[in-house]
Picture 1: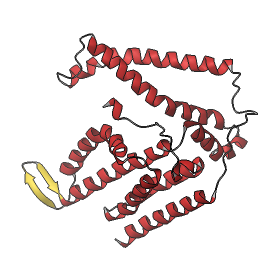
Picture 2: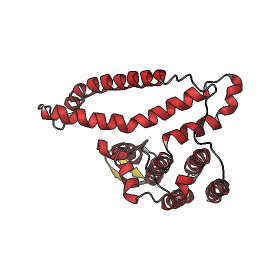
Picture 3: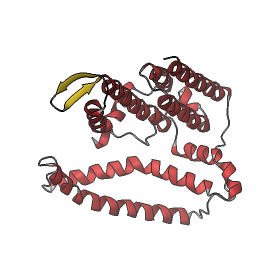
Picture 4: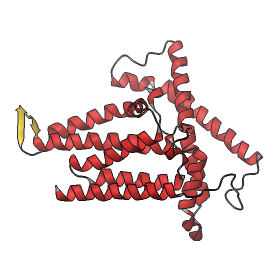
Length: 266
């Protein structure tokens, strides 16, 4: 299961999305999220899902990778789906005792599943096609007006970049610790929920120790390289917008307009 978590990973490529300005990709991702949450019907979600499918096709990211990113959230989707399916009021279609299934419950459950799945798959495309360094520069550039208010824009962007960078590292470290504990006879897959929760203690302690150790090593490495924050800092690669970036932003806005229009008409 841990190997299925692809959040924060970057997959190098030479597609249209890989070459786009990271600033525009962040804005387009925000517009995509607005598409999903502005739709209140199943048909209203179609423009957002179509937009996501087109982006995946242009990015040349394998379809199996998108499905892989959804596997870790399947238990959450199933749990919330059951709650919504059986406990929402409306026109009753089926009833067994106190358990009832309503038309509104089915519709809301389908909308929720599609929305969450599209949200995870679509937003993951941002990190799939953007390196952590480019995302750091993009966030810093977008938040640069806040520098006039003495807001630590560079430091915030750096923390976000480091957090994204270390997600795959911590997942790999967790997998190694679990394998080592299983080799020592630890049982993490049998028993009830309480037993499995207790079995996580031998994993969490060394994971926290390893995470703090890596943080100290990173801080020491940055100090040795005379890191002083964003003051006077230059960049190896400057961000430059192109015609394709503005075209992508325009298409995203048109899809958002289509989502709102479809939802209003229905």
